[in-house]
Structure formats: C-alpha cells, structure tokens
Amino acid sequence: MNVLTGTKLAIHGGPKSVPEGLVKPWPLIEDEDRKLVLASLEGSNHAFGPNCVAFEQEYAAWNGVKHAIATNSGTAALHMCVVACGCGTADEIIVPAYSWSSSVTCTLHHSCIPVFVDIDFETMNIDEEKIEAAITPRTKAILVVHLHGLPVRMEKVLAVARKHGLKVIEDACQAHGAVYNGRKVGTWGDCAAFSFNQNKCLCAGEGGMLVTNSDEMAAKARQLWSFGETRAPSESRDYHVYALGWMYRMSDLVGAFGRAQLAKLDRNLQRQRENAALLTSLLREVPGLLLPAEPAGCEHNWYNYTIRFNMQALGQAGDPAATRTLRDKILKALQAEGVQTCVWQAFILPSMTVFRAKDGFGRGHPWSHPAAAPVDYAPERFPQAQRHCDTHTGMTTPLRYPNGPREVEATAAGIRKVMENLEQL
Ligand SMILES: *Cc1c(COP(=O)(O)O)cnc(C)c1O
Image (cartoon, rainbow, N blue to C red):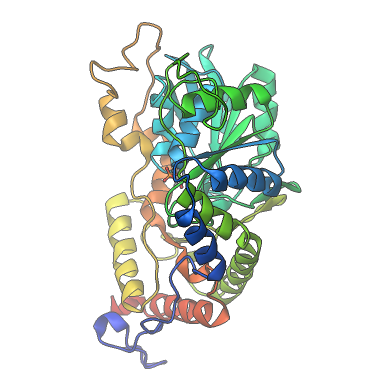
C-alpha cells in the first residue's frame, strides 16, 4: 500500500476507479435507428436495396467524394480498391508493418505481393520517409492506413507516388472524419475504404464503403463487387460475367442502420474529440506514459486512444520479453480498476504466420509466381512496429458518445492510480 496516498490497487482488493456500468456501450441506439431499420424490415427489398443506394449518396456527400459503393465489409472495400487501382498478379503494393491484418491480406486477394515499411513510432502510421526506399520496378501502389484515426501525412505520400507513377489507396477503416491539411481522409488517394464494423466510429454491425472521385475506378470496383457483372443490381442486368467477381454488396437492413448512424456521426465525433482532449489534459502529468501525438496538419478522430508505456522511464528498456511482461502486468491492474483498455494488435504483420509461410492460396502463391521477386519479411527489419506492439494499450469505448467528462475522468483516475502505485505490482 502506498504510504502517501493510502491507495490500494483494485487488483489487490482496493476500490475500483471506474464503477461497473459507468461507461456506456457503443453504439448508442436511438429512435432514428429503430425507425429506419424497422422501415427497411417492412420494405420489400432486403438485398442491396433503397437504403443502400441512399447510404451511398449520403456518405459520398458527407465525405466529399463523387462515388461511394456500399459493401459488406471494409475488407471487401479494400480488395475492391486494389482492383480499381489496376493491381494484379505479382504487382507489389507498399503497406505498413503494423495494422489490422486485412489492410495487407487484401493485396493477396488479388495475388499482389505486399512490401512492408516500418512505422513512425511517434504517429504509429507508416513512416512516410521510408516509403521511397521500398519502391521497386514492380511497385504499383502505396496502401496507407490512417491508424487509430490519425491521418497519414498524405502530401509526402502523394509526392512519392507522383514521382514514381504509383496509385495511392487509403485504408480509412478507422478514420471516419479525420482531417489532413483541411481535407477529410478518403479524398486524398485514388480510392479509399471505410469500415462500419461494430467497433468503428460508424457502426452498422458489419459493412464498408469504397470511395473515389474516379469514374473509371468506381466502375472497376462495382464490377468486382457484384459477381464480375458490369451493371449494378438496380440497372437491367444480363447476368453475364465479364470478369472475375465476388459478392461484396451490402444488405438493406445494414444500409438503414448505417444511414441512421451517419446522421449522428458528426455529433459523435465531436464528443470523441472533446473526450480525447480532456483525457490528454488529465494524463499529461502522469508518470511513465507516452501520450498519442497529433502532428501539425493532422486532425485525429480518436477512434482508438493509444497510450505507450515509457519503458525507459520504467527501467525496462531493451529486452522485448521483459517489456511485454511489464506492459501486461500494468494492463491487468488497469483492467481491475475498471479501465476499458486492451492491446489492440499484439503482432506486427510480417511476423504473422501467413507472411512467414509465404503461402496464400497453396503452392506458395502469390509469392511463388514466376513474375514475383523475392521479398524480405524478417521481423527485425521493423523495429519501430515491434516496439509499439510491445508497449501499447488502446482505448475506444470510454471516449465514445454518449460517454463524457464523468467517464473520462474516472478512466484517467484509474490510469493515474495504477501508474503512481506501480511498486504494488
Ligand atoms: C476494421 C479494419 C479493417 C477491416 O474492416 P472490416 O469491416 O472489419 O472488414 C481494415 N483495416 C483497418 C485498419 C481496420 O481497422
């Protein structure tokens, strides 16, 4: 027990900092959600129906893009981006070494070869300065991820892309409403993918959206999206398969839910930003923490408020295993306090089995294709991504609407209590 504060950590039976039931779950369901979803249920088209068409138009208007295509997942939208950019067998696509798995497996879905670039530890995003060195004559595109809702510095990425004639894909699955240099993400690259999965800033259960300003890319994406046909389901179809296609369409119930949530998105994001600002101010003086950065020109949407433990300050720099052990110990104590936090992704992508094995479809495809060149996925080439993996913990729900100052203050109190009483662990 701390003699100064008399504070016993909850993990040792002390009082919890965040009482059970204080933090409200995500997303908040209101009358508008019920109205639209029930109207869809009573309607006559439950497949890709009128709510999906309206959702596409409303999302395009909200994001400031010409085309939006509603999909059954963000992953589907990412695969469609790869195809819309004209990427195919043995083409290389540059990707960050740390993200959600499907930011990278989407390239394999079209037999492309991912080429990893380490992250910038400060931003957790791809290190824009290291992209150019990864370009080869086979590179076709750069896929950037606005991780946790922090925009990548797109002007640097676009400059490299222009110089080498590459397409740019934005994985904006976590970044609804994030802004770089005054413009929303999703408007910077050639095309972009958003996700509406349960935990994302716009929740429709599952779902996604591809956005682009290019007529040609939208047409290519739509073809893949609906069985390889060249007409949308709403147009008269001849059911002829013109190219390899999947079935990536959204259902009308999801479209209705998505529309209802979109109408509230700006309100929800505004609260999230206020909550993040409050949390940052409350944690600034807490020892042992590295708080998330928001570099000049970048406006976070605070999808995931990610803290890294300052292992050097905690006397634990160097050995990754010991670092992880300490992080996990702190994490357990935080969770015992009722702080809703967890490790978001514990593995860097190049260390994952599918990339270690270099076998996606059997017989080593696509890496074994004669047109492919060898690529080096040795995990030690990505030290910043590894360091992030070993030292972070993330938070989503406590910052989400309708949670506000009370929930954020309790969360901050739990973090402060643990960090000021580490000798109890
Ligand atoms: C969630 C997510 C995806 C995948 O979206 P789904 O809708 O789950 O398929 C892709 N990339 C990132 C960065 C994500 O967070």
